[in-house]
Every structure is written in structure tokens, then in C-alpha cells.
Amino acid sequence: MTAPPNERDALLVAAAQTGDAGAFEELVRLHLDPVYGHALRFFGDPKTAEDAAQEVLLKVFRTLDTFDFRSSFSTWLYRVTRNVCLDLFRAGRRVPTPVDPLDLPARSAPDGAEEVVTTLALEQACRALPPEDRDAFDAVTLFGLSYAEAGEALGVPTGTVKSRVFRARRALVTTLDLDGRGGA
Amino acid sequence: MMEMDHRDVQQVLSALTDGEQVDPAEEEAALAHLETCPECRAFRAGIIAISAAGSAAAPEGLAAAILDRTAKTPASGIAAMPGPVPATTAPVATRPVALPDWLSRRRLWVLTGVTASAALLIGGFVLLGTGIMGAETAAETSVDAAVRQALTRKGAPAAAPQVGATAASDAEAAAAAAAPNYVVYGADRVYVDAGSFGASDSVLATSGTVRSALGSGGMAGQVTVLALSAPASSAIVLAYPDGRRERFVPVVRVYDGRTFALVTGRAIERFGQWPTLAGRFPAPATPDGSPVFQRIGVDDRGVAVYVPPAGRASDGIAIAPGTASSDPAGGNPNWTWWIPL
Image 1 (cartoon, helix red, strand yellow):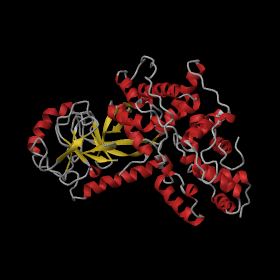
Image 2 (cartoon, rainbow over the protein chains, first blue to last red):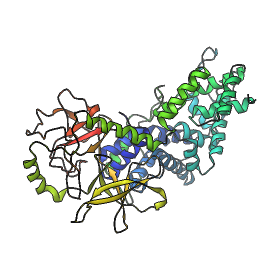
Image 3 (cartoon, rainbow over the protein chains, first blue to last red):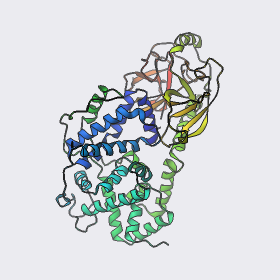
Image 4 (cartoon, helix red, strand yellow):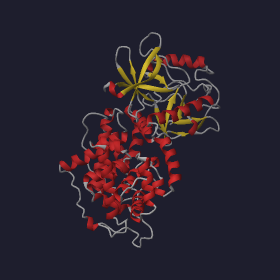
């Protein structure tokens, strides 16, 4: 029987807090993709995203004993990830690569027979989203947070998260020309 | 029926995609709207395509690089700032289209276009199975059910006497002083002391009791257990008689990518006592556990893992005595039993 994700994470964190290296390793393997994914959308550069992801997980390792289970581990991890990316940007150590929505690649099914979006196209379209919409979209779709959890992490009401995620989806559908109206 | 414009309908679809609760009337109206609105159907197809595209996966080797650095980094205090990661950059790799496990909690009918009636039926099962009861209650129910199943399969109560108990008791008596501070909660689940709990009691709720003398030399008594009210918690907090709050966490280990929790066949009524094998197993008299157990592999720490003959790890695993003190088993001189979570 496999535990629900939050239960599984809580047990792994509890084990890691007692020094279980295998439990921390499992946490890294389970959660590295969303951390890297958010950093990639933030900075637009894979190498910078790798560096940022490394800093996030190291910070998690160093401060794991402060996690008090008041929120889910994913909520806490998302908050750390977002803050590390912002800190790197503000310190001038890493700068996001600019993106022009007009330069986004066309979706891979131009004949419209089937709606297919490549990951590359989606990632570039996400980078073109307004930061607040992208943050909410990533919290929900990459980290699996509920609107309430995302609101807690972002310090905004649940309704605001709902609106931002919806705006992000609308923008992505338009930018990627998934509604057949000719794209951004 | 409620009238909704395109934006309202699409916002409902967006929320449903994320597994959020939506007003039933709005949901019904949105589904009805879809039947006659190509624009909103196109939007739904678009968010399905976006979900199916997945997201960029971390490059090969990044996890290993991170773990290598954490192995060299103190767990607390100031650590050296990480340097650049060796070039492992590859073109954006695509995560397989297989949905991440959080998405399995979502209402997938939105993504598959199932008819309204079938969708509501499926949605109901999804909600019941994942969150509507409260994540904590659902998780505890599923885990406790697994524990009860394991205990009752052979019909042996948790406190049954064990074969070879005398020899085990002598060895155990010698090692009693070295046992970590354990308590047993939830029938037979073993928890270990993880330090004082410093947060406010406002995040706690009374959850039950454990029977323990804790670290005193007196008789075991009932100690109140306070559970963290956050749905994701699995730690418990014990309210000590002197007013202290001490946090205890489940003892777990990982084998083959799955997490297993330590259970005990005998009650632990004071600190210093070791967990013992589940009551239905006689204590093996041989180093390799035969014929009670057979080895099936090693866990993530390289510790041998055993199961009963013809048994499966999905039903539980056994660990032999002689683990290191840093192992989750803590150097227990007894064989131990671990159940999957």
C-alpha cells in the first residue's frame, strides 16, 4: 500500500530529521523536478536553473530540522524555492533571460488535427507569463499545492490564487494557439 | 439552470482541473455550457494539452551532485556556498506524459471529457479517496487498516510470547540501556524521541494516549498524545507530566523506493526497551533468519531485508539484529518487523 504524497513526505521528513540519509535522498529524488522546473521558468537558462535548484535543496538540507509539519512539505519546499530564486535575482548573482512572447515556437501540430504541445514550447510560454501568475501556476501544477496551500505560501487569498492560475492558463492557451485563434 | 458566460465556465474548468471544490450548480452549468460552446470546448482541449505536455525534468546527474554536496555539508549551521554544478546541461528533457502523482488526485474527467453523470460518479470516488475526509484521517485510516490486516492475518495478538524469549531477554537486558527513547502509538507503531516541541499548543489537538513510564523508573501510566493539526503531519507530541512537550516521529526506513514503518510485537512501557518482532513470528534462531525468514535484498542503507518464505515486501519486511546505531533500527538486538506505508 502506497501512502498519500503528504503522508509519505511527512514520514520521510521525520526520518531525515533523525539523520536518515536515505530518507533525505528519497525526498530529493521525489521533489527535484518541480524545484528545477520552477527555477527554469524563472531564469530561462538550464545552467542557472541547476545552480538555483542546488541552492534550494542545500538550504532544505540545512534547515530541515526547522520544518514543524504545520504545512505540507511541498508547501514549505515551494516557499523555499521561490525565495531562493528571488534572492539570487535580487543579489544580482543570477539574472533571468528575457523572453519575447513573439519569439515563442509554434506548437507542433500546425494542421490542428491534434492539440499537441511540446514541453519546450510550454516552458518558454510559461516564462512569458506575468511573474505573479506564473508563481501561482507553478505552485499548483508543479508542486501540487491546493489553492489554499498556494495562497498560504504566496501570502494571498485563495480566490486570488484561483484567478491567477486561470489567467495563466488563458494566456498559455492563447500564446500556444491552442484555441485556434492565431496565437499571441 | 444557472447561466454562465465563457469566462465563468473556463474558470470553473480551470478549478476542476486542479481538484478544487466547485459549487455543484456551477459545475452542472459549466458542463451544460460545454455541450453547445466550441470556444469553451477548445479551452478545455487546450488545458488538457497543457497538462499532457508535462514539465521539464531535472537533468541527469543533478540529484547525485546535490546529494554529494549534502554528504559533505553539516546538517545545521553555516555551510559553504555551493559552487557551480558541473556541466550536466542537456536540452530540455521531457518528463513522461504519465501524470505526476498529485494529478491523480484531480478530477480527471475534465481531462478525458467523460459525460457529466459518469464524471460526477468518478469525481465523488476521487474526493472520498483523497481529501474530502481530511488528509490526516484518510491517511491514518489506510495505514491503520494495513496494520490491522497484518496483525490479524495469522490471528496472533501483538503481545504474544515469542519462541526463544529467554535468550532474547538476556541479550536485550544487556542492551536495554542503549535503546533510544521509544513509545508505541496506534496499536503497534513505534515512535522515537525527536526532541522538544517548541511551537504553540494552538497547532495541537488531543489525539489519544500512550502507555509509558517515559524516562522515569516508576510504573507506566497513560501519557496524553497531542497530534499536529496540520493534515500532513505524522509526528506526535507527548505531554509530559512536568509540562514539557516532546515530539516523537515514526521510525521508518526505505526499501525499493517504498517507506516502511517499524512496528513492535511487544508493548514498550518505558524508555530503554527495544521493539520486538511482531507476535506471529517466532524469533529466528539462525543468523540468516531461516527458516522463519529469507533474504530478498538490501535497503537503501545496504542493510539486508527479509520476508517470510514466499512472502512479499508489500506485506512487510524484517531486519536482522546487529544494525548500526545510526540505522533506523538503532542497533536493536532483536529481529524487527516493518510495514509498508
